[in-house]
Amino acid sequence: MRYPKVSECVDVFEALWPTALAESWDSVGLAVGDPDAEVRSILLALDPMDAVIAEAVVLGSDLVFNHHPLMLKPVKSVNAATLKGGAVHTLISNDIALFNAHTNADSARGGVSDVLISLLGIDDAQPLVPHGEGLTTGIGRVGDLATPTPVRDIARSLSNSLPRTTTGVRIAGDPAATVTRVAVCGGAGDSLFNEVRASGAEVYITADLRHHPATEARDTANRQEGRPQLIDVSHWASETVWLTAAAQQLETEFADRGLTVALQHSAVNTDPWVERY
Ligand SMILES: [Zn+2]
Image 1: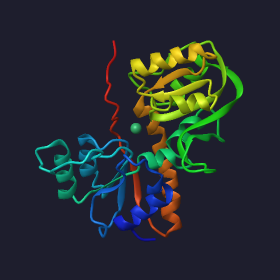
Image 2: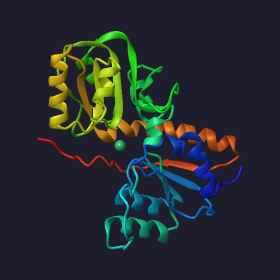
Image 3: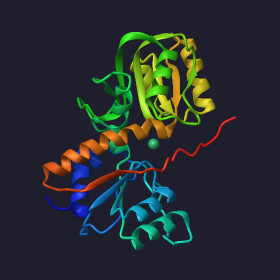
Image 4: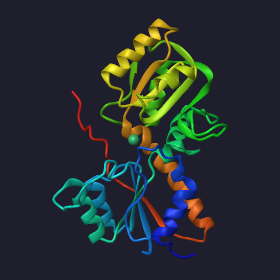
């Protein structure tokens, strides 16, 4: 067993979360780093926030693996006085590489939405928006509960199985409605209402639901059969559960290649919301 190079880590990430599965607008892959540098430890986090990068410096991590990209929109400079430039400077001056798998990790089998829906005991979910025909990859997931369940029981179950958050778990629609077919999209999923309705889902679990998409989705539901009911969870919580599954996949994939690397979970909670009254 030996330590991988950054390029070999990228090969492992690519095997698990192929770049080809990413949405066209996304930014995924190696954002900062020397492909030939050796990697002894990887820090896993959702967001490349300053506190996560500072943690990587303190821990002596060689690579930060994130879900969300540091530079989703193009930047015109990496001036250290700017938000993004400052992060890039800190990473380079501490020999830390930065990699992210975003919508490719949402889309992949065993990805973000697969992990989220598996919290409800659904292990055979199908993509809401398949990536190509006949494939098991794609954005969101839809599947059936073993028994019809009131929406409020699903919300309570999620509240117990997801990490505690300030914003909690919220229901729009009828909390007492009994449902079987469940759609989920980890992270912000308010662009998928048409696909959710087409899937026959009776409840839709996602994050970052805003007032207008939520009220319009409920009015649309009320003019039809009342579905889907909506459950809104914390964006951070909906995705952070995936990191544990990702670490297990990485452990196996590195070992299969005769490579050893320490995997650490960031202790920084990057959910921005800290109090509620
Ligand atoms: Zn997200």
